[in-house]
Length: 453
Image 1 (spheres, rainbow, N blue to C red):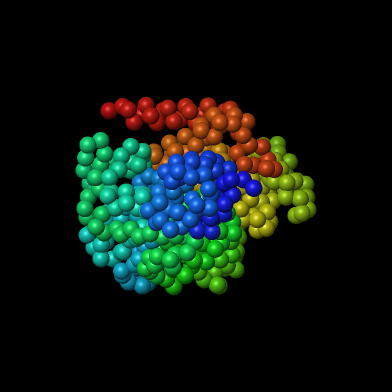
Image 2 (cartoon, rainbow, N blue to C red):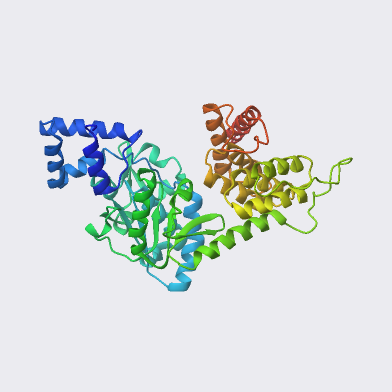
């Protein structure tokens, strides 16, 4: 048995953390530090001290998680929460509403929500909403309560918000007292929240970019615990790349304007299946006479019969062939059963996005690309086409989002120049080398434009 095995088992039982792969290196460093501090190599003695000494436990756990976060991470979800969901919730229920950031680390997430709420509601926000941050790591909670930040924590924060809510303090920036006094922080063990009651019930629980530390069985157990903390019709909001990994049958997955969340509603699961299928069908069918459904001059009007539904790869390849010939209706007919059977098929979602784009339905195209990225964040074609919709004016431009899309293409293809982008049945619609070249060109153009004046 590995000398680390007792520590892995103890941490997993105590906190649910899954310390394999790259996480094992952090455990090795933490155990070595513990051995030096206590002057013993005996694992049983070390574990006994960790169990009995809460301060020692806090320091040990703090070394096991990355705690890499920043203000306004995944801003689209925060915008949807503040501008769409919470106003609707207030209208239905009234205030105050309770929000929990579960696994809040050093506080950037709950403070980001607080800033957005103050921007939306002004001083009334402090009476309309109660915000709590919880984490098992007491050291990062202490940092959150102090509210002193620097460096990369501000990478996505708009300068106007930084100027409004922070004051310089040496080489760092101090959060204003109004926010620090509004947001409360509590110790929270996600595996056993009843050990240190955190309040509730909560109308919204943010569980974003946390579940990477837990295996599937532990995520399911955590969801059961968090479900008990949800108010009736409350929601659980996960990180963009974690959504499917948390669809475990404990809570029902819901799609609202391209934002996915979970809700404790026993009737929502079949409705969700219908909703996903209906959304895909709407995105695919479009108007009866699409603007660009005419075949190219000289193109064959007869289409070979589709392959059996049991052969999705052949269906996808035939759909790509029809798309390349501008036969959009035929492409839709091939994609519809695929997406009905598997609404998360990355290849089909990408093709559906291209069909919607060429039929001048840019928002539907954007949503298809976004859903593909939920399943496969490495899908560089979806990143590229999202950015193109913004650059070419098919959707209202968002320079930050556009630049982020091109940057993702560059990062992914610089790391793997021949990457398929997570596509399994069809080749990328444009060569990886061309996509990388264009992404660098368009990103450079934006940078040059921003530098003028």
